[in-house]
Length: 280
Ligand SMILES: Nc1ncnc2c1ncn2[C@@H]1O[C@H](COP(=O)(O)OP(=O)(O)OP(=O)(O)O)[C@@H](O)[C@H]1O
Image (cartoon, rainbow, N blue to C red; front, side, top):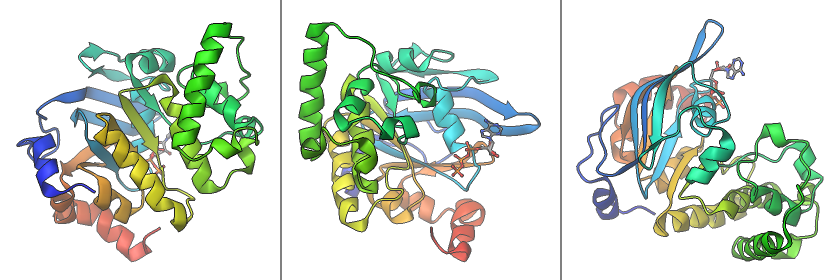
């Protein structure tokens, strides 16, 4: 859990305003826009993500969270804009190149991946960003030495995520929570410095929630940057160092959990509406 003191240490004096400067940003986004026909899905003027923190990206359905994730990790093309990761411009790079630069996103298990073993899923993760485009992927032949190295890393991660006993089972046989653990473990195969988690708690049995939360905070405590999209407010408020709120493609607010909870614009655009709907 993030105590106020550690949050202050990590975020410095960052202001709780959209587009605020961070003391040591790992990701800097400028003027990124993506439209689908007449609909502007993402229109982010400026956004900085602080290195070594857990940053949540929240917003109502259709706010553009997934589209922004896809753009930043090279799985979709922006109409305009640029962004840098760890000081290097990576706008327009492929998912594979972005992964090599050190930023990886998780993907939910596609049908093809559910038919593969847990270990093979991990080995596929070693080949860089694993996206929908790789849905029908099969393992590329690897050099023996590389295969040995990858297998050793996969087993080490499966051990850490308590999936080692499942290594030879097909991924489709895993529970919802175990799938989320596999998605996270697989994304770590390339040892990224930044991991982007797509709804890490969706479909997770309450018994596994604490374990997943523990894994996420350990990643941050090891120095990794974690950016995640999530709908569960308790999870968001509980583990985030910083929260970015997107509505209709734009950043309408950002700040510490306490700032966001009391932000009237966020309550009007998102939190209030969710309370009426009943929290998902
Ligand atoms: N490939 C696409 N073609 C057309 N419209 C799209 C496409 N991808 C996203 N959109 C539209 O862009 C908007 C933003 O969608 P996006 O999935 O990024 O939102 P989101 O915040 O991730 O929503 P959710 O919380 O429901 O997952 C939506 O109106 C969506 O319908």
